[in-house]
Every structure is written in C-alpha cells, then in structure tokens.
Length: 429
Image (cartoon, rainbow, N blue to C red):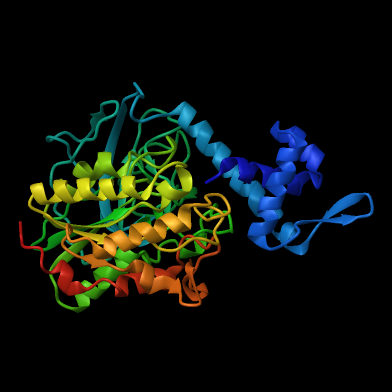
C-alpha cells in the first residue's frame, strides 16, 4: 500500500485543509494538492467540498474519516510492535506449557490433552526457532475447531503471531496463572483475531496434502473498509477462505486430499515490506510448501502485492520467480499449479490509483501464466471472479469493501474454479 497516500487522506479528512494536512505530514502544499487530486480520481468524489472560505467533508468523506483513522492507527501499531519484537533477531526465549482439546463454545473446551516435548511437560523455545511437540492422542473430524492452550510463566508483551487468522482466540490476563487444563470459559477475559505462538498442526492421516500458497487472498482476508484494515470481524470463525471451501469440495467428492493453507497477509513473491508480511514467497517456498508432510502439490497464487507494494517490479521478474518455484517443486518431486492474479484496479491498495502500472502488468503476467507449459496446470481465478463488464475489477457480488480481497461469496467462487481432477493428478508421496 502507498502509505504516504493513506497518511495524506487521514490528514485531509481530519483537518479539512490542504495546508494544515501538508504541515502535519511534512510535505509541501503542492504535493498535498496532488495527493488530494489522486484520491478524488480514485473515489470519484470531491471528498472536500468548498463551503465559503472553508472545506466541508462530502458524505463519502465523512464515512471514510473514522475508517481511515482506524487504518492509520493499525499501521502505526504494526510499526510499534515490530520495533519491540522481531522473531528473527530477538534474543528472548520463551518457556511454555501446552495442551490441546476440541473447542466447544468460545473459550470452553473438551477434555484437555497435555502436550510433551521430548517427554517433558514444558519447553523453552530458543530465539528465532521452532519446537515440535511429541505426538498426542486426539481424534477429531474435519473442520472440528481445536483449542491449543499455552501458558507462559513469564510476562511478555509481544510474541510471534499470525496477525489475521479469521478465527477468535481467547486469553487470560497477566498473573492469572496456568489455565491450560481449564475446560470452562471463565478466566479468559480477552480475545483476539490473531493466532499466537502456534504455527501449525501435524495430523496423522492417509490423505495426501496440497498446499495453497500465497498472500492475504489465500489467507482468506476480508477487508472491513475501502482501506482494507481493520479486517471484517464478521467473517471470523466461519472457515470461508478459498482453501476451506476447496477442502469441502474435495471431501464431498470423496477425494482423500487435505488442503494446507500457506497464505500470509501482504506477502510478496519477490520481496517484502519488512512488517507483518513474512519472508518473500521465493525464500519461504521450501519450508512453507515443499517441506509440508505429505505434500504432493502446490497451488500458487502470489504476485499482486509485488505489483502494488513494490514499485519497479516488472512482469519478467514475476515470471522468473514463478519459473524458480516450478523448478524447485519439480526437483522435489511435487506437482505445481499456477493461478492467475485476481483483478484489483479499483482498489486503493494494489490498484491503479497507487500503482499505475499494476493492471497492465497483471494482464501481461496472467497471459504468461495461461500460455506457459512449465507448470503442471493453471487455475484461472481471474476469470472466475472478474466483472465481465469491467475485467480489471472484481465482480461487485464477489468483492469485499476494499475491492482487492474477495468476500466470502468470492472465495467460494474461487474454490469452485479449481478443477479437482487437476489436484488428483498428484501421486501419493
């Protein structure tokens, strides 16, 4: 996202003055006027309408004012958190105790199963590393919600997390003690839409695994405003991501294939923002896709953020990145399928208002994806969710408020676009 434009919008809506907004953001008045012009073109609205010697907010601007403030506050919190904690460089170690159980309602669970780590009831996680528990005896059906309870004896202010999990987690206050064996909901006074500390769950099964690899669209993010953040809390706990819906289709078809979601919000194929977006797709492909137990194939949907958030990236560079992924997958004996990039020309983030070349480049990349023969197949998400009357945009029925991320209906449509026979060509490992 063009953070400068977001800050300009916030300042303009707060002050209703180009000169005051310019002073707040530390730019000249001509630059702020240019930003206002770009915003007006994007929204198709004056935003600030002259009323005598002053400006007033248009109805749309009044609606955007608080949402924009929340978005800026969210971005500021991300920066603050990263300054305080970087899991890759932090020297802190975490000691913890863990249990797992079926979730019944909210923070209430079924019987807790204590987890051990090399036979010990607790473990210290070295800085920048992962730990894997011993196997635990817990049987459950597909889509059964699980509660992984973690107790940290020492107080901490920041931990590794999946910042938007589209699922509710519950926590107790500092000093409340070890509640990992508790099955009742009382004591868990806080909640968050992030997954904290836990990065994955290995399940013993006869099913093959297919990895859905990508960014926030694979992650199932639905924006709560035209500026994307905050996330739409109403979709939490519905398991409406496209990989979820794809899993339902596979189950209904009787195919023993498990879909593993390896989507990270704001992730890029080639680079990164250095914030909450994780390592680049190229650098994490081995660990997050090829090394997944039982994985036989990978469905890749990645690149739209490179075009929108990384000025200067070209279609040739994206295509070279795809070629690297294809080579690595085939070397590992895995199938790999490429998905076309979904449209976003009318969005603020990744759209043409902030990234003028993004749509033209997207079309070039999609043409290459459809015509190349290096991968083992193509899934045309673009064709599934685009507006036939405006192919550079999501069909309104499938678009979330930010016009970048699909809504739940859009994610269902994406899942329906995946040929199940294509995934079934991946042999058992």
